[in-house]
Picture 1 (spheres, helix red, strand yellow):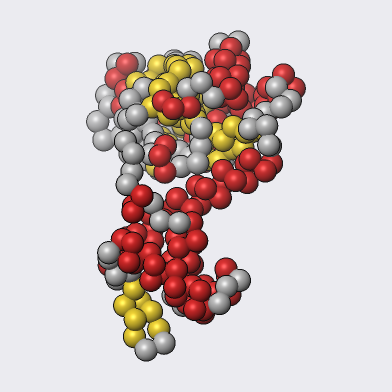
Picture 2: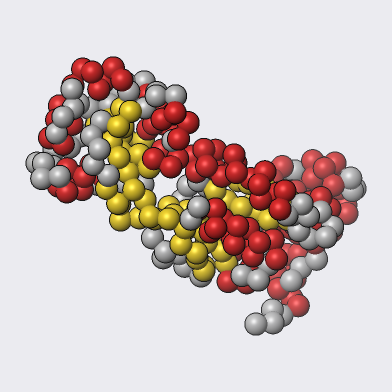
Length: 296
């Protein structure tokens, strides 16, 4: 859909408005933009005239955003940040081989980053930028080309590649193992159980699958796998963790399997990307490498 010209203000007017909205001062905006106060005022008035909406209340020598101006500033700021990020990426790699990837913190730190040298050696012309992100978001408002995510394949206006099922086991430290002498699945009910927001009913499912009463399962709640694993290492309880993300802890024996009863959760690991980035060469290369690497 072609947007009418009157709804596409110039970058100069938008920059002047955003700076004044952020600083609450025409003087401060002028200093930030290296312009005169009158130039900034003219740009803002031009924008208001073009939009036919007042953006500021003017009281003597001060300005104050209108409700409409406050909402508009929030959206314009996101758009300007997006343009700035795109410009920085282009300058960093003029060939256009920049891939901006959102990744789950634990997955990124424990699994992806240690393997990235292999990908970058195979693709020396690609520059990879990583940002951590745990929850789904709107690709239209984030300057990323793809996202690694745990959950289901349902993500609005995005395509996906399945990477792996999520298989978890109960892990704890040696002291807790010795204290409770876990022999059967029902024995874990004696110990504190650690829970994850991304798998809120994980323990209920594991207990039910192993024919153990699953009512009133309580314990500490964590929003990241890494912190839940750290709590298990510290002896705070037993955590249901995916083995492939904690290989180092298992090698060091800081984590041990309490009961060897694996469970496949309802979620899985996926790579998501917006439809309009499907054929972006750096993404195509990373997607193929990632799928091959995950499948070993």
